[in-house]
Length: 235
Image 1: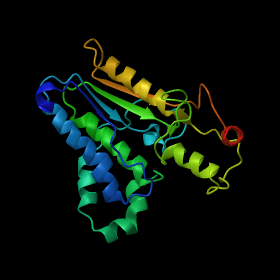
Image 2: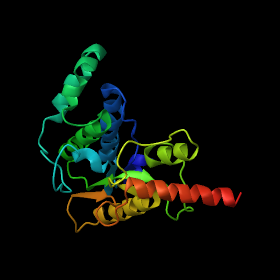
Image 3: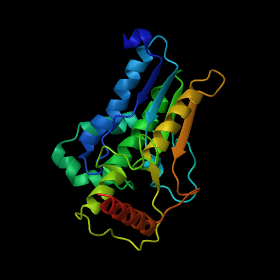
Image 4: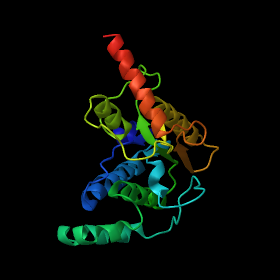
């Protein structure tokens, strides 16, 4: 039924655990994308394939970072295959060398998935959507909504419950938080735009706030405290 009728595919499945073992992270974030792409190529009426990535796929770069695939012709397939053929012991011994200057397996595997997607997409229209740190909603379905403890949700909820008493930092650093409803609304708009026949075959968008509407860690903490005080007064 999917092959015969589906015209839009949005792949948002991923592991956002930064500490996943490298082979496990590849199975979900890299091979997961490839398997959905294989299905997309079989669909008879597909208009667009949208991949939800992360704006930190290029976090190893300094300075101005463009909305593009850097080094798009890298032989990621061979790199991944070599990693999958390694023993667990060998990977543990050399993981930092394998992921290079990436801070964790999450950002590394999402980067690899993007490159392989662009190399393998063929004639498909593709959108790559790169959100920053996803936080609770600003309005829909209601202010403050979240259903998970990953990304900013975990810090907000666990901090409010007293399980996280402090975060390392000066408080002056800008933290790139983006409400989940802005992420999903923008994702739908980008998908519709990418499906238009008069546009390019590949569109890449970052979805963040640090440039237009920055917030510091201190402001984030103060906003949380005000919200929790409001909840207590209205219990």
